[in-house]
View 1 (cartoon, helix red, strand yellow):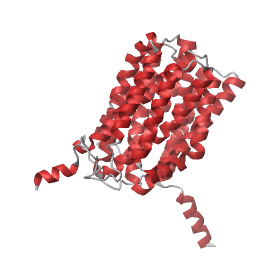
View 2 (cartoon, rainbow, N blue to C red):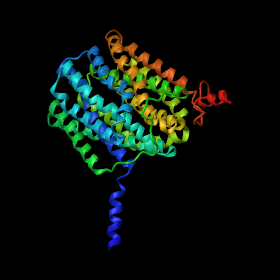
View 3 (cartoon, rainbow, N blue to C red):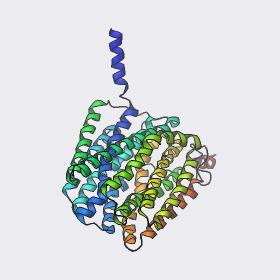
View 4 (cartoon, rainbow, N blue to C red):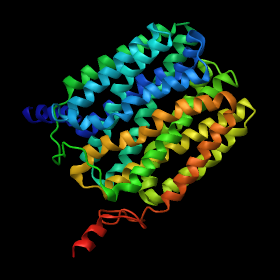
Length: 408
């Protein structure tokens, strides 16, 4: 009898693992953020009368905390990464809960800045913890599983939006309160339910910027640039040009995430088999064609099809992180995660504002710029070795082994 009881206790405790903690936090982030994201274009147009330049400015403000993500390494002097991640999720949830109360450029800038600070700090620390806690052989599969969890969370959010706003006529304000409030409650449960997990490797508490990571930095920078074109202008086009409603935008997101839910883990395993290099080459080839399609599409159904395909190709971008894990010094991971988020958002802070003004005169040119970025990324991806590791970070250009040759 005692043995049975002991086994039950062990079974109960077995779910309190670092992997499950990561997955639980990864559920909260997309559940709350998806509500903010899917409602945003309709909310700002209907309630705040935004133009293309206004939404570009707001999105640039949203990316400022991402640009400052390098400061996360200094916060780690005071907080453990796990605690920092949970505090960040709380900040994000509070910002989302307040969004519906301030339908103006100043009000939305303020709530967006609060939400985005939590969002970007969490993404930075979550990336660091994932690469630290997982073995290299497991990372691609786990990232696929996390993609499925995020998709389930997003699907839940979109289903709730459809039910409460389309069928029960809930206001934007109450929808934001519901999403943010749910996030706060779940984060508190996670905080209480999981123990503090020690780091596997002590991390540097200062900024690390290594020449041998140069290709990773460049790919990260270009990823941030093209991601903004998709997130800001593809969605805005669906509403402004083709008149998509909240429920129709939600349906598009649901289709995207249904695919990720069922095939996310398989995509991760597939990347593990074909390698980071091939996965990124496939992604960039597809994104070039998608952005080219955006530039000239005149049919709402075709635009929606491109939107879905665009999202599917982005699932392959996890290969950038698995590539970095293979070439990185383990002590660099937390600091480099902070630096890489800043690099990712250098373009993200500038592009929405600049392209927002270009959009007023030529939406086509905005998407042609996106195609150009995809081509440049494709060219750079050819420089990833088939078996990347420390000292073999790139096929051509500066690598860590060059330092060793120069010192012999």
